Image (cartoon, rainbow, N blue to C red; front, side, top):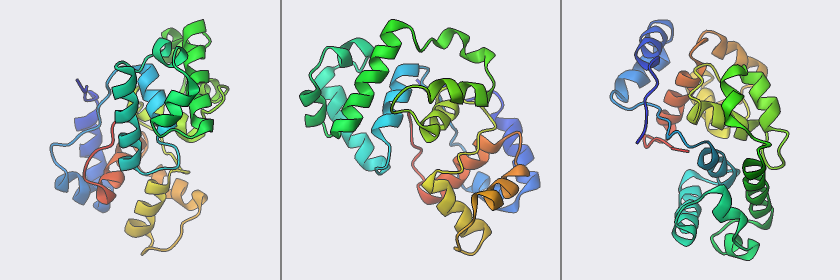
Length: 207
């Protein structure tokens, strides 16, 4: 069951006051919110599966993986052959990344118990020390699992496209310019990002 962050009402009120684009999107998508499933491993695993492919394609691969393994857990991934993972639609590299992630959870290298003590950048550094987890994947984890409120994933293609459309008449924006626009959204940049994603795809992505 998805859990909506407690800060969501305050964030949407403040963003609606500060930014006319977001005010329109918040009104348009009233009733939809970000939610966390509360499963650290599957959130990271879904992020790896979703790297460089569409939301629809990622969901299809995840559905096949879930059907084959029943429960996608560190143990089930470690105990299945790489060829089985590839048969579910994972590339050879992603299959290796998923197995590496599973091993790190099983041996305690990744320990969720202390993550709440880390700030955003500190946690991103820890997560990206694992092969297959880049900054984008770590940022998706902070947004969708920990529901950190102030993450701005500048390298995300969807965010880049939405900001071009809404803030620069469809023209390319530099990351520096994106960061400047996003500064007005702090400390709710995750929320602003989520609504800009909705402007491209009304169906919320879930990790």
